[in-house]
Length: 273
Image 1: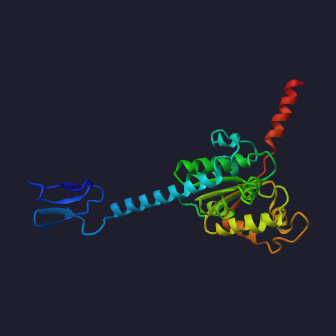
Image 2 (image 1 turned 90 degrees about the vertical axis):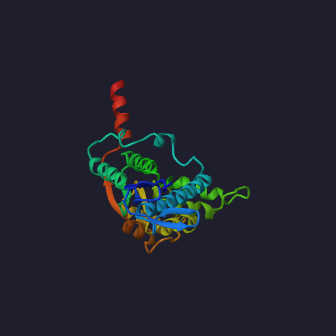
Image 3 (image 1 turned 135 degrees about the vertical axis):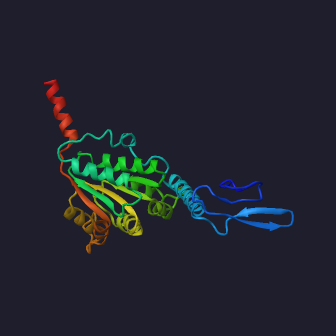
């Protein structure tokens, strides 16, 4: 009988007529061996080639997703951010442009070539939008990792313990290998030499050519200064290598809205007055 992707178009028997791929209609040829006649493609048709390529991609993503879940477990996002979506985002004055850009990025993830850097004041929805992108990209089947930067440092430092079964190399490789990495709240706290040299630099540098999203409460000059000096005022990235990589690989958007948390707090105070 013909291959499952083939059919008989004009034939009086299973060994006469024309066989072809149901999708691209490429004709097959018949080979005759003693006790065997079989219809085959002279070479792989585009349908079969695309199908095989997709199967390879899925297997490779499955392997990378397994490594990510092993190295980062499931405690990498707060319960609140696990539930957010574009539908649950409340549009307010100053959020419109960055909202529509974030949504476009998620919808066109397959074709976009740059990540997003979203910066602005506290509490105005930057992490919400970044997490919404992460969820949408995961739904498409891609391997996506969302990390608060301070959380990344804690996870990485745990690998220094003698009891840890995960190495720092495992942590870095999983962050580098995913289809989309989101570094939330970059610029919070004060960098140490270890955090810069052993964690942040190899991840951001290793993701060159891949899509990475960032959120920050700092503006670009403040972020440059954050990379430049460490906790004890020691020089770290005085040449601006990492901020240069971020700016070169991202579309930059400022969320100019005020803090929704503060607005909600003020409204509660007015309601109870």
